[in-house]
Image (cartoon, chains in turn green, purple):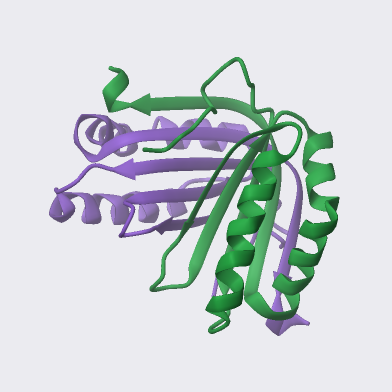
Length: 116
Length: 116
């Protein structure tokens, strides 16, 4: 299941961060643990609401979406020292290319077959 | 390569639509062509900027991100008759659950190893 709190109004996600990337070949042994660690660390940040990450092993293309309560939380996460190091490794070694979009959430929809 | 125009300032993406979904099992023969058709149709919409879609075959979780020039274009796409039918099929048959977030783009970053 998607463990999403996006539609949970007790923790409104006002900001969405979209990270679209293409992994460079190789370095799987290093990349995997670092990516896992970043997800773990993101979840601990103040203002964190939710995170979903998908990568297609065949195309090496991945999308990570993180929702936060406010822009300040996003900025703090971007500047977290361990995250800064990971970003530097990403540019130096791990990614062919990436795009980051930060957006102010306007509206959200949610569907769950088992909540009907 | 990620064919992204997001960082191309000649077509500013002011709105980002994030569709996070978990596919129900089965119906691959029907889902694949419909999903492909929706991507093709989205690309033809006025105000369309870019679209990236990734699904992990192992977890059945997918994320599609689409960028548009303005909210009006997003609304028109949501209400496109063929898209409405696809949304109905999605709820009836194809998805276990999904979350849609529509966001006003605040800022965007772009990295491409081959543009350095």
